[in-house]
Image 1 (tube, rainbow, N blue to C red):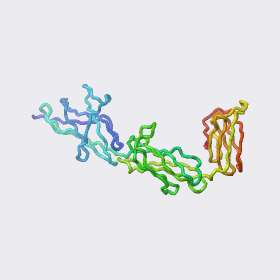
Image 2: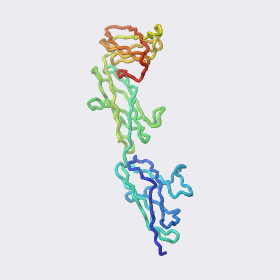
Image 3: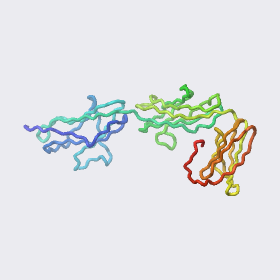
Image 4: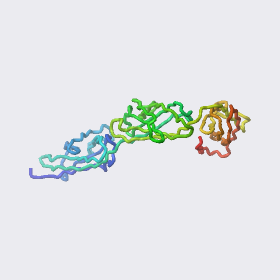
Amino acid sequence: MNSIHELSLELDGDPESVVDAGADLNFRVRVACPAGCDLGGVPVTMTSEGTVVPLRVPDDAYHARSEEDEWEAFVATAPSSVGEHVWTLSVPTQEVVGILHEASSLELTMQIRAHYTSMAVWEIPSPVVMGSDFSMKVGVKCSAECPIGGGRFEVLSETGARIGGGVLGEAPYPGTDALYAAEVDLTAPLAEGVVVWTARFVPDSVSGPHEGSAASFSLPSVRPPEHRVTVSVTEKDTGGAPLGQAAVRLGAYRASTDGKGRAALELPKGSYPLNVWKPGYEPISGTLDVDQDVDVSLEASVATDTDTDDEREWM
């Protein structure tokens, strides 16, 4: 055995430089000999800081190797620790068809990042009576769809004080694949006005590296109701037919008209800006003084401008 051949080792394309922790990485490798030796069966290994990284053969047709294909497909699992990692892909020195082939290797450098999370809040009553108890829903989803049920969250006041919290449900929220949610009980502020509170996910309460996330929400806190206002809306251009599904707002109070064109709101004494809006109709605005139960009748005209993109911030 006098000849010595050098092996060449190459990757098909550039590997990802930033990778989610624990993600599967697909790559294809070719081992070649300049003299054209048949290198079928030559072992390929991956190590990281001296530790062997297990390589798997992909089971999907896209990565399957054909008889004419010189590239070998592998799957490896990215490290679970955040930061820079260097993997070494290598083939050892070995004898092939009676010829010594020298070892070859190459390095892959990647930055491992924590999984992103996103947070949502919903079913928030608006407004709430100051000092009253209410509940709302909080949900968190991982970018890699990790099972983060059992993770903790907190609700913080405007000053950052913890005012509530809970634990995400163990199963995904109905109708979703990986949104984990919970209902949280809270107490409205004792003072009248609008506050901005924040729900915050605690990432170290679940396994694996995850980024934290938060969602802020406005909460109008009002005095206890004293009077009932009934708003009736009809169509001006159709001889007074009831207008259903029209949005009605009196200050912080909101409602929608029913099939009879009526919406009822209970609120304390005071002066309120009144707004009524429905796509395809001219908006109605005004001011309403409330010092007793009130019945208000309004007529809505079909809009001359049919552009319905104006969603109006007050809605």
